[in-house]
Length: 182
Image (cartoon, rainbow, N blue to C red; front, side):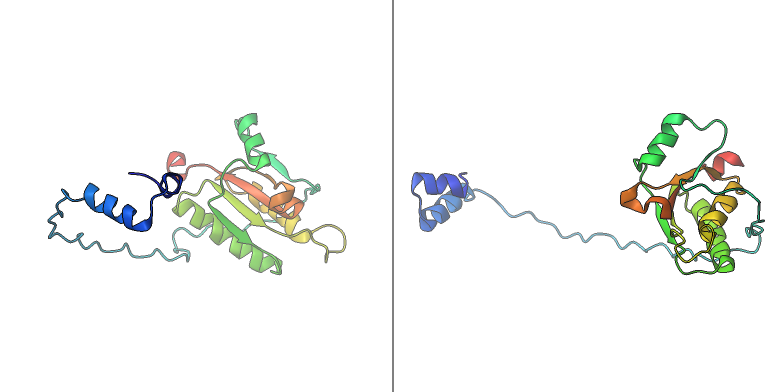
């Protein structure tokens, strides 16, 4: 069959095109199908709340200095994997925005988010903590994120995002596989 462009080039009209189409499909027979796609139940959604037995203790405050660019990796994490994390080449599975939250609210939200990440086998997370323009000395949430993420065993590495994904106001977090750790 000819495309419209070829038809115009050869000077065919719409009537000739229709005749050509009918000639081409004249020997075709309709398919006999009396089957309907089977009914499949949708899986029930899993609630995002914490179970009593899975609830992790909240984080402790540590006295560590927080630089402009966050960088942390556990021993054994390959440099290339960490560079891929820093450059944003690892696709993020979920994002958490902590803008405007108080420290206690951010702590609870982060703990819940990390538990959900383990439940759903998320590998890379994007956490937006902000740049702390309202803070007096250094960004409070950024400092706490730097402390809290180091305390969780499932966090293998984290770093500040590239400029196009939040820069120093956000962090990528690389998680280990929960099933392998058990």
